[in-house]
Image 1 (cartoon, each protein chain N blue to C red):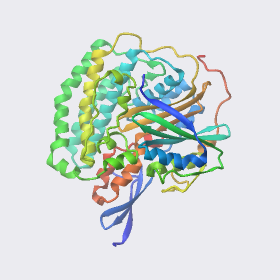
Image 2 (image 1 turned 90 degrees about the vertical axis):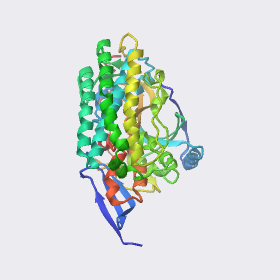
Image 3 (image 1 turned 180 degrees about the vertical axis):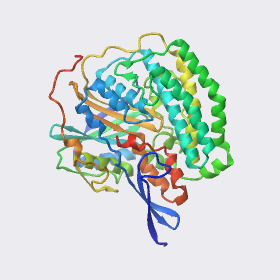
Amino acid sequence: MSKQITVPFGPQHPVLPEPIHLDLVLEDERVVDVIPSIGYVHRGLEKLVEKREYPEYIYVAERICGICSYIHSNTYAECIEQIMKIEVPERAQYLRTIWSEYSRMHSHLLWLGLFADGMGFENLFMNAWKLREHILDDMESTTGGRVIQGVCKVGGVRKDISPEKLDEMVKGLKGMEPALRDLTNVFLNDASVSHRLKGIGMLAKGDAYALGAVGPTARGSGVGIDLRQTGYAAYGKINFKPVVEQSGDSYGRCAVRAKELFTSIDIIEQCVKKIPEGPVEIKVMGAPDGEYFARAEQPRGEVVHYIKGNGKRNLVRHRVRTPTFTNIPPLITILKGCELADVPIIVLSIDPCVGCSER
Amino acid sequence: MTLDQQTTIPIRIDELVARTAQMKKDGLRLVQIGCTQVGEDFEINYVFDKDFVLTNLRITVKQDTVIPSVSGVYWGAFVYENEIHDLYGITVSGINVDFKGMFYRTTIKHPFTVTVTKEDTPCQNK
């Protein structure tokens, strides 16, 4: 047996936008064990339910993450609505779905850019982020915010989108589709990208399910879990098929995200065709008394918001389980047996969002 | 309206590992483990999913109760069990990857047991 050495990876590393530390136990260049360490950016946001009353706490919930911020606020609102048995207007449900898909697109394009950057493909990185700007522009023009939207509220949404603007948004997305095809074509078919990703960071289907992997990390290994299939918001009225890849490697996880961009465009288009006229919010009276686990499909996978209320203005508990948190055990399994040089790209392949995880 | 279904089943602490093992045998996925302080008690929810149906096994314990780890059944449970220990001070015995209180770096020990609730007042929009 070769002598074992431990190489620290992170918390600061060129491929890591946020701090996570991995102690990599190596035999020669091969990783034989991994000990993760988080907790560098734990903010204790969930504890703020004791200081903020539940309608205003949605602003805190949205700030759990700087990327999937909108979906956090949406899931929090849905959780309260389920406890209080609030029927949200149908138009608001469609608007929530549209913004959720925009959120997914901007997150996936952000990740594709970072992934390209991690591979040393700078031009691809710039192309991905150039396209992401279009998505952020639409988010800003409809909600007022690029990263933190503040548009979701308990009982509906704060802003409506005019029919003209909705048509303009679909035209814009359709117009950028050829550029998106060009971009994803490089990720899916370029020889140097394939060489860097295929067969690297294997996660078997059985392991992905047993270890609790979610989102593209699970779907890239053939586990077809996509919470949008539960029909929350307006997803129950939309036809779509989750993108599932069978390869289980970094390429599979990349391919899921690349292909989901087009699923999102299709969902937005269907929403714009089906969105009914009507109000976008209802007045909410009282306070939640009960508990509920609300789940949604974030760009990185299933997020769980648990809320327990006792009929008072401050909730008893708000607990969030983010997708990256549950993707840590699968990451450890993926890394065992890989080459040291592949560690950065494998870590990136699960799209880690550490700030989100630690809350 | 969501199609999500969920059921909470209160169980005794001595049933926990066996019931969790049965969940695994039945093909359920561990979604999360979370803790909620209710007065002097702590509710710990072990949430499982299969085909978008949630089953929540709940144990209710005191802070000084030692609870058995389920990481021997679901390997990935260690992240949740270390989190519960660090935030609530509840000891979990037999965790497969035990950070011994170093999972989260917090300035206050067991910060989620420190109550900061303001005096109860009626809801503004009641």
